[in-house]
Amino acid sequence: MRPSGLRREMNVIETRGLRKEYRRLRGRPVVALDGLDLSVDEGGVFGFLGPNGSGKTTTIRCLLGLSKPTAGTCTILGQNPATDLAKVIGSIGSLVEGPALFPNFSARHNLDLLAAMGRLPRIRVDEVLELVGLADRARDQVRSYSLGMRQRLAIAAAVLKDPKVLILDEPANGLDPAGIKEVRHLLRRLGGEGKTVLVSSHILAEVQHTCDRVAILSAGRCVVTGRVDEVLAKGGSRRIYVTVDRVGAAREALVSAGMSCSVVDGALLVDAAPEAAPHVAMLLAQEGIYPYELRPETIDLETVFLELTNAQKDAAA
Amino acid sequence: MSTLVFVEIRRLLGRRLLHWLSALVVLAWIIAGTIAFFASNFRYEEMIWIAFSLAFPLSMLAWLVGASAIGAEWHSRGITTTLTWEPRRNRVLSAKMISACVVAFAWILMLQLVFSVAMLPAGAIRGTMEGIDRAWLADQAWTFLRVGGGAALAAGLGISLATIGRNTAAAFGAGMAYLIAVEGLIRGLKPSWSGWLVGDNLALFLIGPQDVNHLDRSRLTAAALLLIYGAIMAFIALVTFRKREIA
Image (cartoon, rainbow over all chains, first blue to last red; front, side):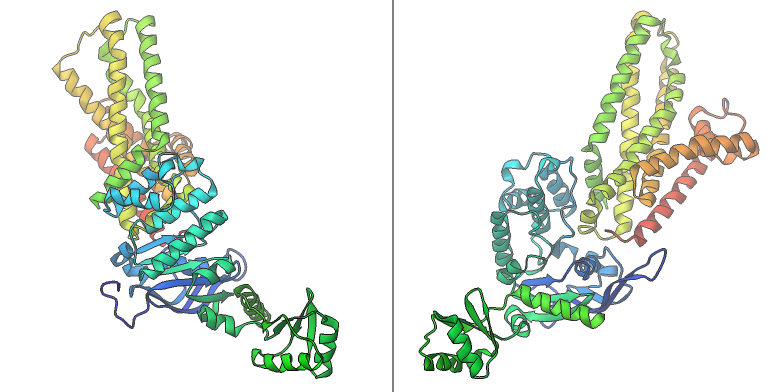
């Protein structure tokens, strides 16, 4: 499903040279965003990653019209959030920096007020309460909720409008493993329905499982963006993981053949591209050593994230 | 806009502060009625003067309710959620101001009516209802409406200050400090400036020029000046709110 009025070639979210400085009473301004270029096309789940202070929440605030950029442009559903957000706000659901609801009101009262503001039918409140598993506690005051329950309620508020674009800032915060799994399924489902979900998170394994595409931010800039497999391919050193019986002999055989390798947790890590795996197998077989396992080392998003963000820090230093 | 105002009125009416203050005030009225019943020969006709003396504390309550209407939102970050549903900040703040004024007016009117009822046994059974006629009732109703109007203005000033200061306590403290300390000092040091003071104009508006005759102006002029002050504060609050970064 394509949002009405959105041309096929248009990105749902786009920032160009987005810069945000926070002025201070003393000293130089703090640069939260330093010329961020970002494009999020329609449909699927987009992971927005970066260390603390990298500018994720500031970007989200700019996209939602809560902060004004110092320079550059950003658009959401083709509109400038600073001036025309009202035209598309009915199609945007969001959760910014954790739950922000009235603690002395019940979950239902909070959602009823939002539904009234958006002129949504009350039945929709029941649906989202059921969706996030809060239907049984809907009449309790939010102040009596655990952090995880508040987070679920905030997610319920974000999806209440049945939005075309969903922006979630750290949605898994405070959730237990079952809750995280539920949120993952919800995001996958929404992304699969053609909605665009932008999710910022620190739980990188979760992002790797949930997202189709990611962008990694560091110091207010986007250091890499693309499909998860493309990003994984860009990071990490290329090594081959080998499990054998005689680790010492295997290492000797490979080193004497001019290869560099190390022993980690009883396995060998050979510094070579995955294409060199047959050659490694041959060298070991020549010595009568037959591996149980021989595969390219698995690079996870965390490794790529740390490598890229550390590289960016080093470059900045 | 009407939807927003309606939502804000619902939000305000659901606030615990309003419920607690209502309960406390009604309890105070019942105690006052009981004391009047047993300890005096209460002349119900004097209710009108009691209404005047209650105008200031009731306006302060309205100020507090108005200030907390947005102060609580800053505190709970509910304002962030509100703005992700209605990003037009002028509309959001205008709706909040209108709803705070409407609720304060109706609430204070209701509290005065409850007070009238609470004092009724003291006048009807133990004291006297002498002088209570159609003209007195009309005068009393007009007084209640004026006190309600003063409360609505106080709520508007409260919400404006709390928008600027992003805090209920700061807005309430600033209001009290201004009315008691600053205006008190000006009144003492520069009596000729008292025509510009909120307190004096509010007193004239509520009580009337025949009893507050040092200002030499009509009730309408005093009301207009108070409205101008309210509009200036609301404008400053709107400009501040539009420019503010929302965390």
